[in-house]
Length: 408
Image (cartoon, rainbow, N blue to C red):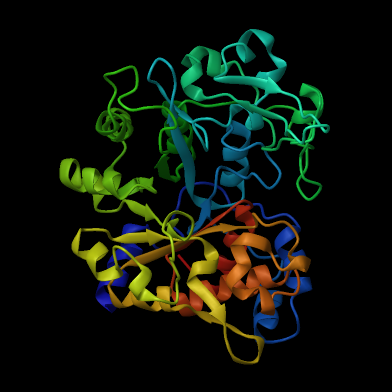
């Protein structure tokens, strides 16, 4: 097991020797240290200090750029993630009407992540236009605008915004103006959307590694009768080959096991470091991270199929321990026993933790009391679960922690 985990560490580029200038962390990581309760972890992180040089780390994985404060999947967000020392930067991949790959978290989220509804000529192309809320009937406001509704040129003409929508809105303006109070519109004045090829060129120039996620189509496949899921999956890989990117720098992801198996069979250089994203807590009835009998397929079967890296949400990897501590879950223990590397998602996506942290902290809600627990959870994920890296909406935090404890 130790040899296998060392191999995975090398696979993810262990060590601080990444290209680029020193990371710029800003005040947030140190604010989180201040929020920690007194103890050894606080002492260790406080001693790390603000006067040292922090370097980029592959343990720090940018989730959609830096969407705690920047519109997701925009050039501005990627640059922010790079400056904060993310060693690996994500692009969720969807396709346009003319079958070009673009960075977008969901094929059909343009109505919440861009200004498309304020652009009448493009809003008219949406699968479903804006419908206002009707308090009298209880109807919620809605819209559905997809990348596959637009050509690449039309997509790129949009401006990214903070991902949000007001379901009670009776106007387009109100529907779009719904950024949560704990995020910000301070950096949302510009949001430059990117094609997948542009993301590759940008991240290559920054000297970082890549983690593209093949998003599940929300239109019938084959699209337009001829564009199949396998063509879509292959196109993603082909764009790295065309750009001269070595497979060792790319970690393709998918929530669909069939995509992982396709890459393993058709393009094993890329497939062997593909990340199987696990959302079975939402898709498999009865799934319980503490009950292996509810996992189909189980950890050993996944490993036998060739899966090397498994990525569940944060909460599936931990549970409350004795005396208010946090400890690895059965899921985490069994994954390691099967030889699977683990990556967790997504830190700093929950807003303030005073109320328990919501979805991402649900398994440890009884022991979560405030924002300092972001670092407490991160420490358990690294030190006890042994994750290879953590996706974060604000990579400065994971970069800071990785530097302080010597994570790669």
